[in-house]
Length: 138
Image (cartoon, rainbow, N blue to C red; front, side):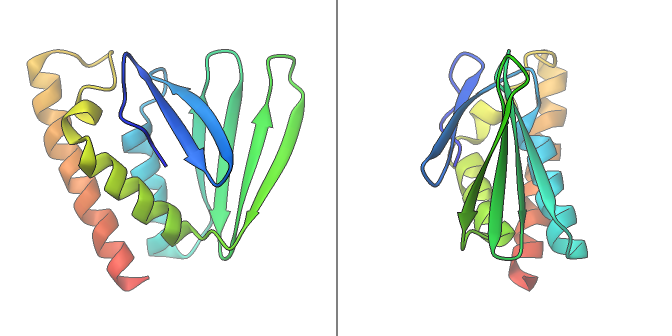
């Protein structure tokens, strides 16, 4: 789902869809919170992708995931991926963040001091733990 972040960019892959996400949005934190809330409260979750000029929103619930793609001219397209649940996305997200944990701690360039990164490390670990607990109950 998420490639290793390099120079403020990560490739998001969902099915045959790909987007290049910018550091302008703190994805690991907001996306884990979306997973936790969606799984905990049985509601749809959305995941925003900033591509610096275009954007996407992934919405997942039940047995479908929908991707709203907005290009630089504000034209929108919809892509639907059947049989991909929020739990599936959450598992992929947790695994990908854990695989490159320190890179995701340093992802958000607006918080680059060591004290920021120490706080982010603790908070990100806590969000991963919460998401894993929600997945166990899903």
